[in-house]
Length: 227
Ligand SMILES: Nc1ncnc2c1ncn2[C@@H]1O[C@H](COP(=O)(O)OP(=O)(O)OP(=O)(O)O)[C@@H](O)[C@H]1O
Ligand SMILES: [Mg+2]
Image (cartoon, rainbow, N blue to C red; front, side, top):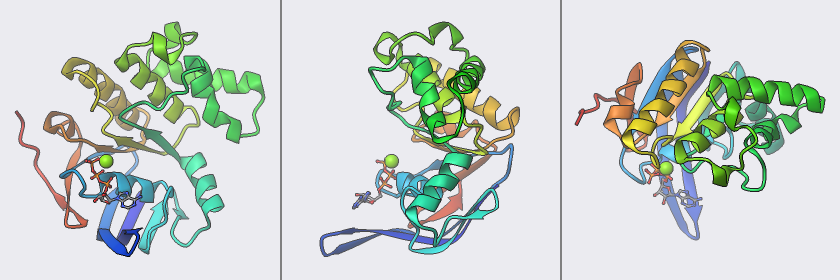
């Protein structure tokens, strides 16, 4: 579902060239959950941005659900991303003035759907994350764990094949974090999405089917040391 081969990406800042990804390989199958750990600044968020086509790779192959992302224009990458990727962030990134349901409907505006169809899809996603009863709440009227559930609903409303999660439990207490991870695990194993979870928490990484570490610009096999 997701394949990266020999991917390189550097950030340019003034005259400095910061090499982040340097010949990185990754494959994630449908229904598989992969964890990625690695020190701060090792390039984990950069990697997710390259997978999602938010930023282009400088070298290598990025293939998503049979579509090549590398070498594509920004607008084509955006189209492929909208059709195949859901993104979950540490700090939820919900729009404060919109209700939970409206937040979940937001990405569906990219599709040619009636308002009714958008609402139906949003409600189905809210049900998957167990937040139907909170759909009229504003983000400020929800707990951290509830906001993360809403952001997961937003990520899956368009029925993506790949779910990318950047420290999804980073702002949650242990118990709430595990509840959120149970949803993400279900999306992988029951709904058959290819899931990549970036985390600093070995207990979260341990829930994945396969554990990787980003080190010197490439991914290596890892075994999380449980606390
Ligand atoms: N837009 C940018 N311009 C220049 N340098 C950047 C940019 N984004 C990231 N970097 C640099 O690239 C490196 C990798 O950053 P990245 O955000 O991918 O790390 P990370 O592994 O996600 O770290 P963290 O665990 O702290 O979130 C860092 O050294 C960072 O300073
Ligand atoms: Mg990061």
